Length: 324
Image (cartoon, rainbow, N blue to C red; front, side):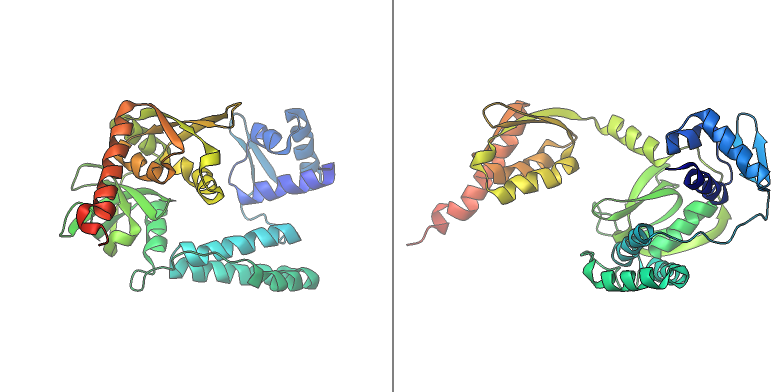
C-alpha cells in the first residue's frame, strides 16, 4: 500500500470508529508506529480535526465527515455476498435491511461497477433455510436487545421438556453454528444459558434495562468447556479404505467434533486428535468410516462404536429382517 492509500485508509478508520489507537493502526497496515504518527500529522496539516489522548488513541471532532469514499469492485462484491448470507441465514427484517443498504451502495457505484454487480448477482447463491414464517424478526429484535441491554421475555421450547417455559433473559450475544443461538443470563435458572432461535415460540422486548455484565461469548464458551470437560480422542484413518466423498466429509465436518490437529503418516494413514465432550456424539460421526478408522484412545469410544454397529446390524440384518 502506498502512502496516499494508507493515509486515506487511516481516515476511513477514524470515521468508522470512535477511537483508534496508534499501535492498532500500525499493526493493521504493517508499518511502524513512527510512520503512523507521521501519517496522522499529515492529516492534521491537511485540516482534519484530530484529537489524541495519551494511552487511549485518536478520534475525529464530533460532526466532522467527508463525503463517502467510492467502493472498489472487490469491496462491493464482498458486500453482495454478505447480502446473500443475510437473506438466507438471518430473519426477514435483517434481510430487508441488508437489501436496503445494498441499494444505497449501488447508488454510489460507478456505472461500470454497478453493471458488473448486476451481472454477478445471479451467480452467487446461498443454500440454507429461510426464516420460519411467524418468527421473521427474532434475530433483529435480539440484536437490538443486546445492543441496548433490554430484558427479553421468551416463550421457549427446549429439547428436554415437552412444555414450553417462560423465561426472562439478559442477552449478551448471538452466534451462528448449525442454527442461530443467543447466549443470555436466564433469571429463571439464575445462570447463563444458550437458547436456539428456532425454538423461541414468542419474544417480547421489555422496557427494563438490565445492568451491563462483564461476561462475553468467549468467556461463556470457555466456562462451558471447563464445566463439561473435554476428553482427548486419537484416531487413525485409512483414507484409502474410504470413498472420496467420505474423505471430503471428514475434513468438512471435523471441526464440529473438537478437531485440534492431525498428522499425515508415511504409510498414507492420517492420525487425528480431537477434544470432545460426548463420546456417543462422536461415535455417530465415526460409524460410516467402519473398516477405515482405528480408535487409539480412549477405549470407551470403541465400545460406543460397537454398540451402535450392533444396533444397526440387529435392525437391518436381524433374523426377522432376512429375506425368505
